[in-house]
Length: 461
Image (cartoon, rainbow, N blue to C red; front, side, top):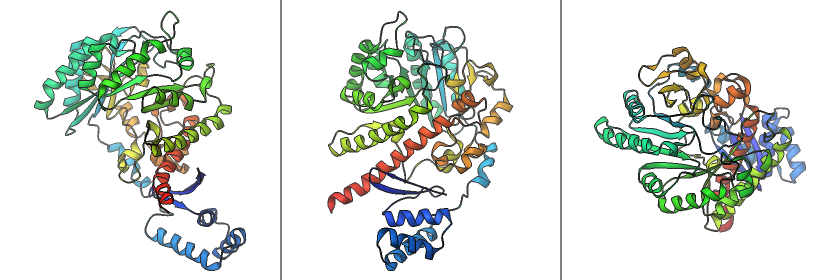
């Protein structure tokens, strides 16, 4: 399978099954396109290209030879060797690598688009006890097999509303990790309202990553991210975020925003955050009921895709000027990227990754919490809903018929099971709107890698 597109002055050819990326000229681009369509012979293709581009037969034959060599080298028109082995994933590893600890099913903000129902996850408000948190770490160690690096995300609701327990869980983890031969990598996800000097000092010492929720410009952020009494939260949190990041000393963090129908010009929000001094950024499309007033629409799609292109081109400019920013969805490794197991099977929700409620119940991930049929067990008895785990084992890119003909399938691994379920009623469904945005992001990310190589070559000439 081949995917071809033109972006930012580059003609790009992506060989799907090998992962090879080729930057070509217009002549080669059209010849490859004619080969893919299969309607013309080589002679007819040569004639068509010679007439369109005023090139010689020798020029065209040279391109034919290059294409033949690439095909021989397994870099163009390669076969899919992975599908026959995909369903061996029913025997995939179930050693657990990560937990999302819901230390607080409550929140001090009342965000309109919150999938967690303002932190309650459609249930009662609750805080995780220290004893439950410690048991969660023990459960992770006991079920992690020979994995050394174990991920633990403190989540909510708002985890800073149970900050002493967060600190206690981290301290317990540091106590047991050496004896267990493990390394805990903790992450904190926060709306920022409760940040103080103690949070800054502890998080910057102990947290491998910190995710900070900011939607961008003040008017955009305050429209949907408000306090319980209706006040905007921008002016409360931005000074705290800046102080935390400045004190972080180069450690990982992410400013994570959500864009909606109200701000499909979301690049302006990303640039606003960059102007505030934040350089590690993420901006996610809202996932909600289509009846919500802030839901993204089909009419929004062309402009959203254009915004992704604007962002990619501006990031190249910033890189060239020595002021780069990182955008989470454009982080792509074309040389040593994820192994094929990962590229087929995805995030591991329901098999290698679980969310833990304040009461110790296990769910496939944070987006399933509160939906009783997705309760998989608890941190004392382990996974007891084996049929559900088996369903998640088979939740891979080849389990979705629509994915088989999608050029981006080995980048998205079939997409998010939670988004699929909430959009279609099945964890093996397809959230097509999200698919379209994902494909555009991958096109932009690949183009940026091409520009890094060919842009420098053009400058040297």
